[in-house]
Length: 67
Image (cartoon, rainbow, N blue to C red; front, side, top):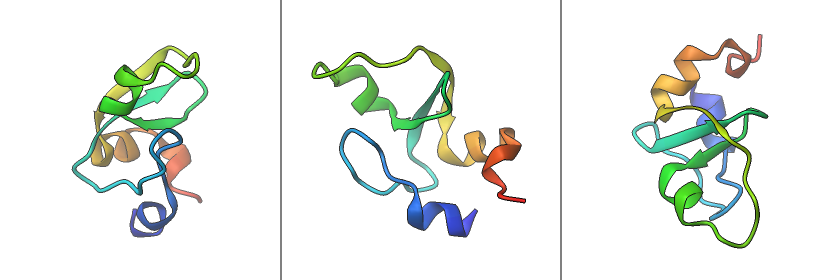
């Protein structure tokens, strides 16, 4: 998870994610800060597939492992 945390950024606010951040995962597997997703009005966003802490999302979906 350490290598992902340094490179993964929210596409709306451009801030890097922290493990404890509350995030949403949309249907095309984009990770977005929870607050950014619900306050974004500039563009249409895809529906949510899952949400929770970044740690939970990374542990749940194996495509984050990079192996």
